[in-house]
Length: 313
Image (cartoon, rainbow, N blue to C red; front, side, top):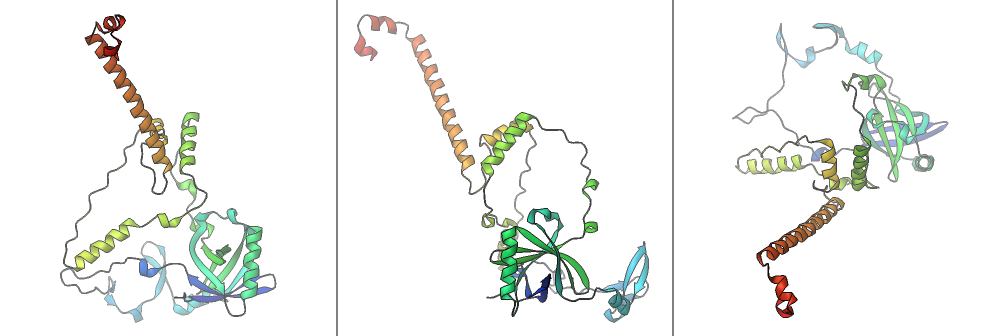
């Protein structure tokens, strides 16, 4: 079933205008949502707004306000809000083109698909192919629904996608993370870490190998509960044990930890080491049995030297 557009707009760069349709990238039907209900009754609860002074407030009596200080609000009327909102012209005006890797993913807030609207097929394809050929993305301003956004337009599959970006002041500075001074890794540790990374390295990303196990479990539990069953909490997953870094790196490289699903390289390494280990243990045990047999039969060599070769064999 074809997707339904959630909005329309126009991409412009230079004197070129491209009518487009905007589509959501999410699948709401695959999400799991819970509602508040009255325990033991089953009726869904309704939300009410209450004023500490006057009690329950009807929606017709509600207004918006900005909190200047704790508990001190300045009220803004609907007309005033309308006056300060951005004028929605539904134009995605591209202001610059930059390399794709120039925009860090931390700026991405939401993602939409964009397709051509009526009469825009040729220009849409032209922009898409030109961006892909140059390995560039377009950065644009977009005014819609009373707000002004900064967005990134890039090629995706055989069409284009649009990412809504966050403004710099909406991102917490990295300097606020209490990181402290980190100890530098030694050459041996760094070398082992690189070997482990090489073992798990792939040239492409296959998202289908990742599934939301929690969501699947919730669906099964809800289905069971709906049939009159009882939901039992799963056992708590064991927490990883913090070990010596060097030993953990060596163990990971040796394949002692299970390799991720779909990647047999770690298991092959583990099997290889296990076989070598069994071989070494086998030789050691055989050598030990020979020494014990020699000590328990001190005349074996003497019989052999007198020509009892058959019994020796």
